[in-house]
Length: 258
Image 1 (cartoon, rainbow, N blue to C red):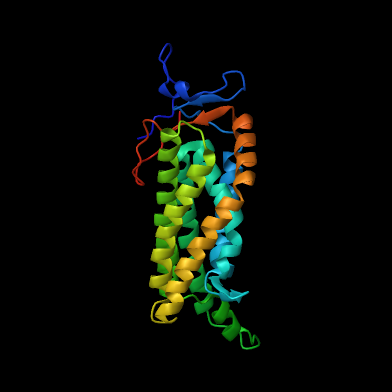
Image 2: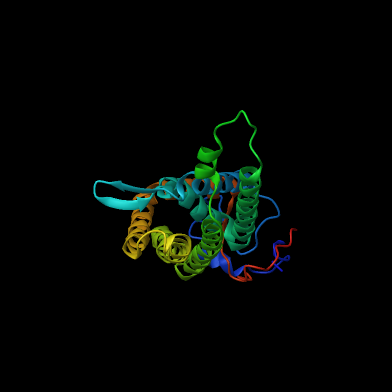
């Protein structure tokens, strides 16, 4: 159970030692406030991009300038900036809630896609074959997508939260790139073999795993200045810089609202 209540009167928050500028209006704390101003909007953006990336880009293999990659990577820049913001600004516990929300939305989307594709078409409608081609994902892609998302996002958030404490809130770039390096490695190693091994050649699967992983880490590095701007603005707007010093990192722990 997460402790999101303010520190008791007179108690010293150990995260206060990480506050580099007491006059900047941003309080370093290990105790999340009960409410954030923009958390719901960040959550909505994250889930929307998650659904779009899986609905539109997951199954298409593209080759551009000699590089072969999954088209879903086009959604990565926005998705991972938001993913980094979630843990960096709102902490692991709030990120965990968003990951589970995304997991539920992804599962519901997969179920409803199956139901709608399976419904008998009207005699006058000639688009069933094309509809099945676009929206009729196999069970392998569905299982791979949901499993890879769940594991990769939790690993990414865990690594980022731990690195934030280790670096005492400094060097944001080390944890955005480091967490992506590990989290996206887990994501790609789960998704592509489950979804496409035996359908694509083994060489294509291995190529896409390595290429997508490298491109995503590269994207993260290139977008570091954008991440800095977004993180700093949100921290100022929320008034806190949250450190996961006493957080239960189990994916299955609950979050108690103050």
